[in-house]
Amino acid sequence: MIGLITFAGTLWGRVAVAGGIFAALVTAWLAFAAHYKAIGESRVLAKIEQRTNENVDKAQRARASVENLPADQLRDRYRRD
Image 1 (tube, rainbow, N blue to C red):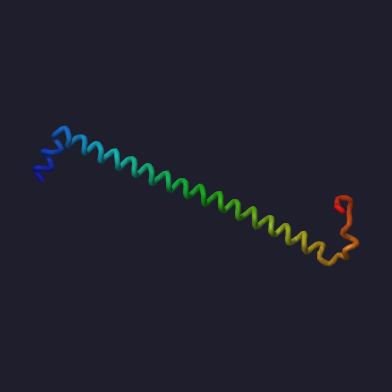
Image 2 (tube, rainbow, N blue to C red; image 1 turned 180 degrees about the vertical axis):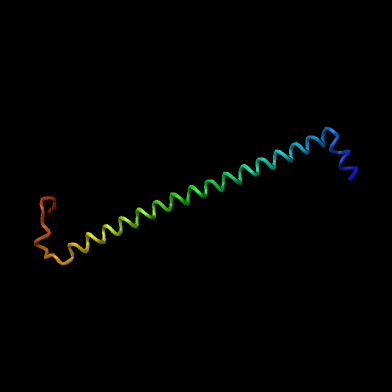
């Protein structure tokens, strides 16, 4: 223990301590950045899934609304030949 205390008092000891503190700060920052990125990705994926489900529901309602109509009544001015 005494040897560790005397090593921390030397130039290389102080460099080692400063490097350890720097490494700990960089690691903490990278961990926070990765966590923040994961949260953002999950929010974006949730929004995409919600909009996709809304579009699927809209398409199913449109399909159900014309399901029982005869083929002759499906012609309108927007129909392509």
